[in-house]
Amino acid sequence: MESEDLVFSIFLIFTGAAVFATLALYARQAMIVAYIVLGAIVGPSGLALVNDPSLIEQISHIGIIFLLFLLGLNLYPQKLIQLFRQTTLVTLISSLSFFAAGYSVARMFGLDNSDGVIVGVACMFSSTIIGLKLLPTTVLHHRHTGEIMISVLLLQDLIAIFAMLVMQVGTGDQMPVMQAAKTILALPLLVLIAYVLERYVLLKLFMRFDRIQEYVFLLALGWCMGIAEAGYAMGLSYEMGAFIAGVAVAASPISKHIAESLKPLRDFFLVMFFFALGAGFDFGGVQQMLIPACVLAVVMIILKPVIYRFLFVRLAETPKLAWETGARLGQMSEFSLLLVFVALETGMASQQSASMVQLATILTFIASSYLIVLRYPTPIAISDRLRRD
Image (cartoon, rainbow, N blue to C red; front, side, top):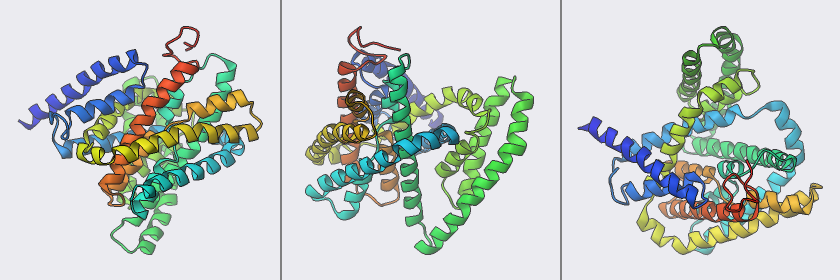
């Protein structure tokens, strides 16, 4: 019976995702919105067609592991250093501004200080998926825009990783100081282990058997899960271990092969991760936090492009490019959902703040996608004049 339930759940997730993704593309929306909406409809708070909380939690957990591993693969040290010099100040000032705005909105609607901090942190980030998926790459102007966006988004991702680490340390069973000391020691040790294994074992195996695609896929998968498990055994999280596994091979010539070999698996778990986020929606909590979430979404949609435009002009970019870049970064992030999910799991956030962030994030996804495809060139633009690959 359990196997039948699992097969039925997989059927609902991927057949439903195909249908909803088709509708999303016709509506000029990002497909992740379709996955979240599908989860909300068929999950426990909706039609309850998929109502096993443990299955949903495991699905989302594995999805997070692969998301962070593939994020780490994109952190090329040399390119990042060059871009970070240009955009570090922009990212820090904008992140603090968005944190203050999110915190203020949360407190204005009666959430306590802890929830206000969680909401503020969730507002600091923009969506990598929406920002880059809606960006054409065939025009030099947009290649430059893409470089600026990537540097900002990756810096934000690093801030998000640090926030997750703080959550992990702050919720340990041991005393905070002891737990922090253990984490501080475990983190560089795991980085060292990953670096040594990558250089003297993983790289040699890839170079020897790189023509056998099945082996490349298995070795990449084993590397990700192996370092994730090592991180967990050392007192870190699976997610942190997976992130380190990605960073360890980012500068290696094999990183592109790993990213390509795991691309289908990434897409598989992307669907499941965002479905699980939607399935975890509490409609009762959403109704209670509807007005606060709408206010937060409106504030972010208006504030983010304005702040980014101001800062990018100070960075010597043209006003036109600054406006466009700000608009493309003018939403909350999948990392906002991830962080509030982790905060809820660790008891650092209430259900009210989680519902507020979840709904506000989805609203900004929808609104931002429409604003971009109506005004700027994208692969799915409504106007032929704006449609670019």
